[in-house]
Length: 88
Image (cartoon, rainbow, N blue to C red; front, side):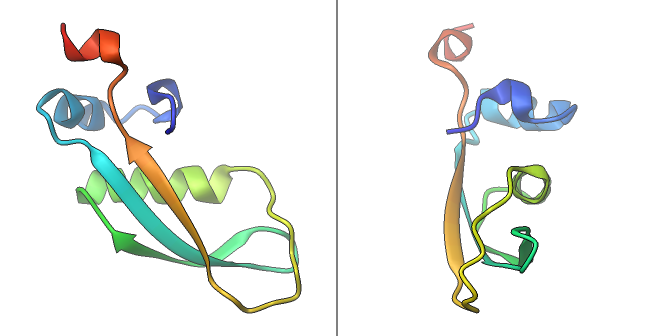
């Protein structure tokens, strides 16, 4: 789960989360020789703005270990409000 503070300045995402639109985005990608995700694809999605944010987080995130393989890597990014914000 990604802390909401990492979700850029996309206030529309916070509004959608408060409206109950929460869930997981599943991405696939290949790790290139520099350890960066490439050929990122959305497998399961919530909304276009959440998809873009998930791709941004993956793309700007830490370096991955390059194994020399062209095998796909899968990652799930969850968009959820912290419990204290759900009740407000």
